[in-house]
Length: 251
Image (cartoon, rainbow, N blue to C red; front, side, top):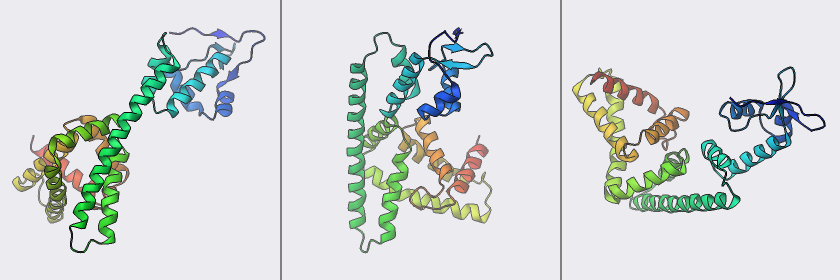
């Protein structure tokens, strides 16, 4: 465990509350940084209160700057603990990250263009159809990390445009079938419900490429906003719980 000294004579230090106030950081965040050994106070008072030195404050500024560039806390910790750490390395990493984000943005633009073509092919596209198209795209991509979006992009390329359109058309049909059985009170162990549950998971795995992290993010997006999927149905959480019961019954 890192040892910290008492306040040195004649040197400016700040208590945790003072540092939080002057840097726009919460006390809870500073405590967390200490727990994960990202930023530990160099000194303590005789009463045991944490004291942050000028070097600690400079390190906090580096952490905040790297966060603004999009680096995770794990990445920041690795950079700051690297004896060969340099600003040039940070710039190179950020350039690489931005290039990946640009690639993903281009792919997302392609998906929107495909949806727009699909919408134009309808005889009388409504304003509601247009809003659903935009909301589906926003929900699908706003919650994912750049790394997850890159995996989704590659999975989409692997599946192909034609298959993606087929799946997009199948989802609302499947959801409606689930709604009907759930409202009828059909037992989740019913063979028909079981088949729908397994198809549901097949479609999820196709989108996520079997990545549990992406699947978790997708589930959390619906939990935060059940109507996030383009107003598909505000009861989506109920359907998901029903599917979970069916999957559990099949084990």
